[in-house]
Length: 195
Ligand code: SF4
Image (cartoon, rainbow, N blue to C red; front, side, top):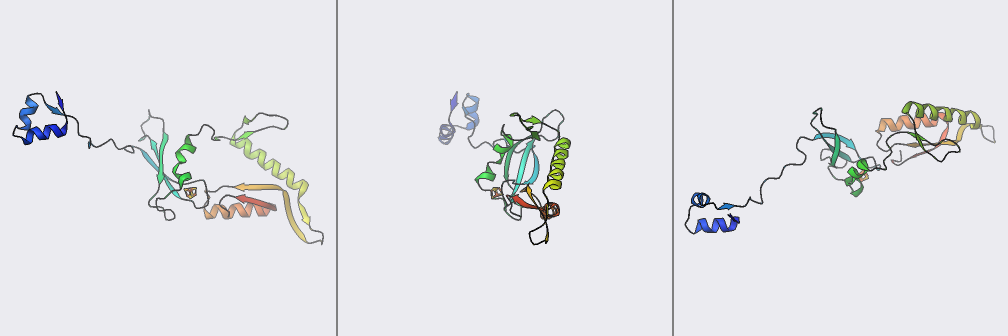
């Protein structure tokens, strides 16, 4: 027979020992305050940086599993990193919803190319993608580099290739990105981190 915890303690308080009640078949329902299973228990914690904007907030990503061979690792929770010197654990709504980006079925996971004249994207390897990009930049630079301006001053401008760089770069990566782009003469460098 089930009684609520309130009823159980009321009866106990009126004189009948709890053990006697249990012996008679009275059992209180499980306490609502029972500890819930901690959802991050046995998860792997990985530190990273939010990829969305230049603030560069620190994040903690939690994934199953604990390294067991029969469990496929999968990120299931992301929260602010309280030890991060910039954000101190805070995330804006975009950062707080990062797990939706990770799980999105529309997320781009590998390089794709749409050949001239085609309306289909096809998957290619990273090696092929990098080779193609290098070949396109070289061909474009060979054809379109402006070495001197109207006054005959050396400018070495490449106006027909642009570069879009990554937000989650470190200062060092940002510096190298700039050096690489400017060395080629590229003027249009864009970055959501605005380096
Ligand atoms: S959490 Fe928000 S403010 Fe922080 S880096 Fe991400 S998008 Fe920018």
